[in-house]
Length: 350
Ligand code: CA
Image 1 (tube, protein in one colour):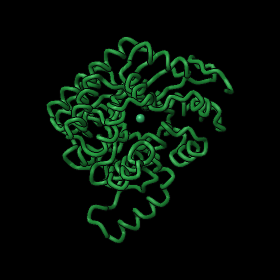
Image 2 (image 1 turned 45 degrees about the vertical axis):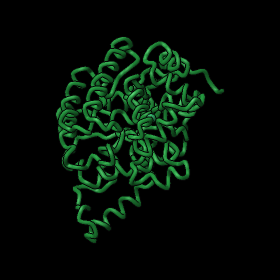
Image 3 (image 1 turned 180 degrees about the horizontal axis):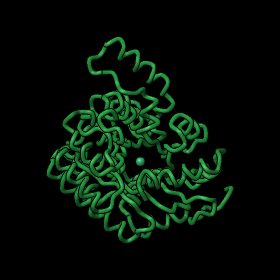
Image 4 (image 1 turned 30 degrees about the vertical axis):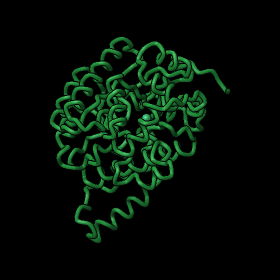
């Protein structure tokens, strides 16, 4: 241990953790039912078969922490020097539910539960609106309701039953984001059945690899489909170092331009800007699950120091030394303050 972790800014900045998960009992119960009834896809069966049903200590402790929006969570934040948590309904939100009415009901209830928790701890919690993309028009209304409840952005857990947000049917969601001027966080879920086969076969479908690959694909699809040409002020946040896109950026951009020039794919149309522009204007990365100095520096270098934010990924990642890794990063003090505090204050209008 190199230093004590305290809240209150003793290192020159507050620590604002931006990808912090909670669950509701109704959400968990329905996920478990889906798995037990054999109605979940392979990924959710793998993920929630573990976190929902396994007696393993990590699974049980994680589930208990997810469900706690009270003193237990605040004590864990205090113990690791986290001043503020940006809370969102844990993956897959309500997006795995087959029954759309179930999805809408649990989603609205979860947003109400989060709003109540924030009212109890207004200096420690902010929240993101959960939506049910199964019903895009309803989700657009819920985004507007969330803004009225005081939420500071929207959380979507990647694909919904194998469908991606560049599908025009989801446009009402982007319209509502633009109208309310809120950022969209795209968090991983397990890959859809069409993608997961060789991953689950090797035990690599979850946070270890499948999450990042599938969500990186989602973020890239949104960029190449021209979402930021249609909504130039839209801000999309990706966790886990923006799901490795900064590392790939040169190649993504080079091959995207080559693909557009050759007209190889009808769907790859010219964009107003190159991918560097969107990564540095519209995309934001967080450091959830990526407490590694070279990785964080690379994200900052590729995206710009205004576009990377700290995240702990509680309760899936609750490691005090990872907070210390951030505190000890060999970067200028003003860059570190942006990373830990002021970028989140700007993005979420805290
Ligand atoms: Ca997470």
